Image 1: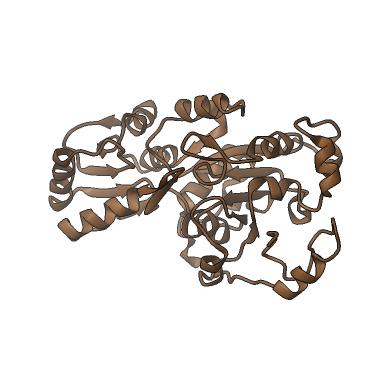
Image 2: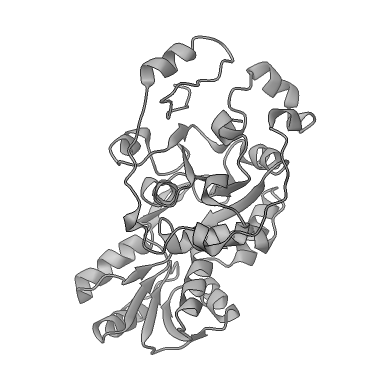
Length: 334
């Protein structure tokens, strides 16, 4: 385990581009998650609002990662939470049945014409539904989006996500969402941390997108790790102004600094895996609400990306040596 994460109690893992691509599990993800679960809570934190928590849990379980719906945190859930907190009981939705079901489960009625309109990742988008939604926005409906991602990574490339829909709707109506509930926003952070019963300092966000996953960590006091298995690159991170560690994959975070010979001994099993982790209690106290990030994350200081390639490359000359320096952020193997 990378030493800065050894005492973390919660790992928030993005799904698309971090754990899997479409229906294909990313190499090493299963072993990494099994290892993390030995001494930490693992939640799958996704902005993708096209599917229900039950669907995600079933998909992960079928891919060999036993998962319950309680392990899943989505932008749909954060949106439902926000609507409830603000007393909004009726909405119109441009989105899939998965999003609509999450809202209904939380006591929110979904109707054709409401004063609040919610935009989700509609993978069955029809032109007629798009036109009807734009009419609501032009008519002054309160405009809320589940998340801001422009693209969703798949094994065959990228497909348009909610951020792309937002750009289209803005071009037609001249309006942008008043509220975006998913990563990187504090609405999602408060929701996720309350679900995990953890403080920001006790958590790590692992993902592949700089402007959602990593900014989510940087803006909300949560450690952030970029994995190079999806959308983001180290070059984009360096120019983004976001602080994060960089790893080739989720597997490399968990088995960071572990020699190749030991990895081979592990094989597919997990015997002896607990020796990698620091011993700590799994119990966590109730998290007071005033310790969580504010809804307005704009008051938090901007982070900056720091790298030390010379020190990193020097350390890599010693076989099996962890690449630990005072400024090390890029922890990939060239």
